[in-house]
Image (cartoon, rainbow, N blue to C red; front, side):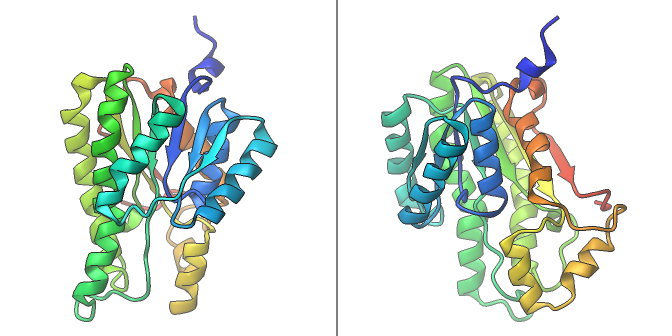
Length: 258
């Protein structure tokens, strides 16, 4: 019997995490490095990518590169993927974590400009990145794509209509990706966090005072999660521990109803 600890080992693999200069993405990228992977830190600002990559190298001793990419820019993504492959020769894990949830977006009031901006990052960015990475994974024997959803994708609050719509669409897209790329040995799953203590949620509190307390009251544990509580679930989906799991939705929400 294989040692269960080996199932979570990412030694020799290359992991890309979008939106990994802060928040959950920052936690994920260091966790993958601690599990043995070479990692690519990416976000919109090169300086921030370089800084986090240096922190990860210092903390883990693993290879970590900073490479800026705005996932809301469809046409820039292929060149980004090419640079990663030129550097490492492969991509084994992709986490589509980059996302935005700016301001209030009620159905009545959201502008077309804001609607398109949120969709370009949260949904189209994940689609384009996956389109470019999946063939790379196929040519190297397979891989794992993890899309980061949200419990807002099940029952969105009225003030986050566009954000919730993108996460609901991402769940549907995940299933389609998993079916289309199963023959390539590329698994695709979605991880849907509930309320985590991130900068995005802190910004939401500014627009909607009291939202943190409200969100905490909606789950069985009556609290907002620490960012480190995402490590186990995302490492599970990224690694061989979930080798027979694809097209699935793992909710990490403290018992919040779907």
